[in-house]
Image 1: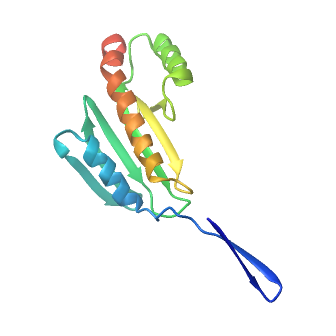
Image 2 (image 1 turned 90 degrees about the horizontal axis):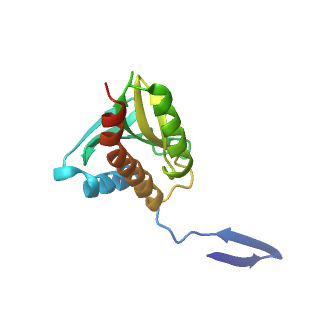
Length: 155
């Protein structure tokens, strides 16, 4: 909503938002409570921010919030396959093809000798709906693909 007022020949325009300010921490916990099996989730806090871990289907999901400012990040990831793997060239091609059309706002990546499903976003302008979608997309993509990838490429 935009309001305009005049004050001694000056026009002042303020942009006001109808959206309430959200607590990122609370929104993440609400989303996790809806997704976590048996409503169980572990949470920890360190210099790097808050870290949640929960189970969604066969996948372990990790959510990191580095802080509460616009410059902080929300990162969600899930390990789906340990490396080394069988037929790694075929695996990498499959993952690249899946990244193109099947992973929405997430993607497959390699870190610490494992394949993960990952999504990260700065908090600037993020909405409660985006927080929910990021966590849900990573959890769903990981759960839908971890067993298949382990069966086909696991050692």
